[in-house]
Amino acid sequence: MINAICKEISLYAPHQHKETIATLYFGGGTPSILHEDELKKIFDSLHQQFSFADDIEITLEANPDDITDKKLQQWKLLGINRLSVGIQSFLDEELLWMNRVHTAAESLVCIDKIQAAGFTNFSVDLIYGSPILNDDNWKKNVAMVIEKNIPHVSCYALTVEPRTALRTMIAQQKKQDVDTEKQSRQFLMLMNWMKAAGYEHYEISNFAKPGYRSRHNSSYWTGDSYYAFGPAAHGFDGKKRWWNIANNSLYIQSLQNNIIPFEQETLTKTQQLNEYIMTMLRTIEGLDLNYIVHHFGEEKSFILKDTSRKYESTGMLKINNNLIVLTDKGKLFADGIAAALFF
Image (cartoon, rainbow, N blue to C red; front, side, top):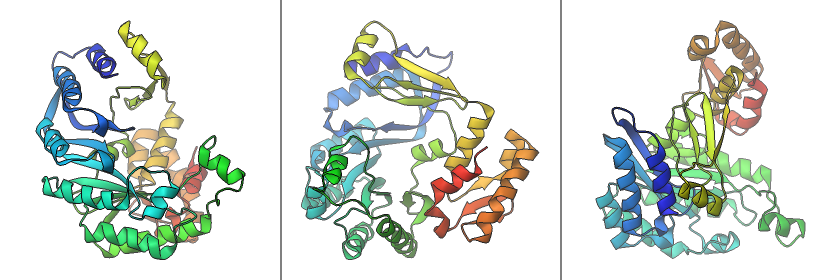
């Protein structure tokens, strides 16, 4: 797999001058299981094709049970300066319910190790709205983030995906289904607690202390271009989107034959506009009507502002200085509001 990923990187024709990349993200899986020499091999391939910005943000997704003092030092030496840790919960009963292999104690130990190793920039994931998570325990989870002075947290409502073991168990009444009213209540609580603790709610699922936003993820929401390497990886150049096949063995076989196995689509102007609406409405900055005038025309801006009025009157969003920004109440219905604003 490592050889295939490195081969894919090498097949991107180098420009006359190396392109400079500002962020790098190892994720969408468990890259923390890789050995130092395996990670180094990927870094070497990237350095051959790209220049790294002096202030590059390099994030590695890590499982709590993979984090050791030795690995933390190895990651730092490779240039990794940000970690994203899949904590999910600080409560053992919840971790057991979610079939996580790490324990609450391991979560706390790994955070201490990260900080002791000198990582000042890191993020944890938390999940709310599970059937067994009551409001008091949700408060304990969030309080732990604040107490540990964690600079960034991503919080997601538990979703039950189709064709998963959880969906089957709920259908067989072996596990309780999610309560959407409880999820909404816990999300509103979360917003209030994080605001009081000085965190910036800069995207619907993401909270950061000042200066600690995820620069990499922010570039997705603002529509920047990005490369992607590995099975199921998605890339984007502003107009065209491409994605590698998800099948590991087919991915490896193709690259052994110097073929990048991908599909692609070119977004229409309307699709580009709808993507802008969908992503930017989730951010603290909101939709910029001046940007829409400049890129999509004055008529689209006028229609969008007009359609937004009914949500302004119900307190779901605010329109000021040509910006359309969701209120806390509106954030509960972000996807539905975005869909209603689509062209």
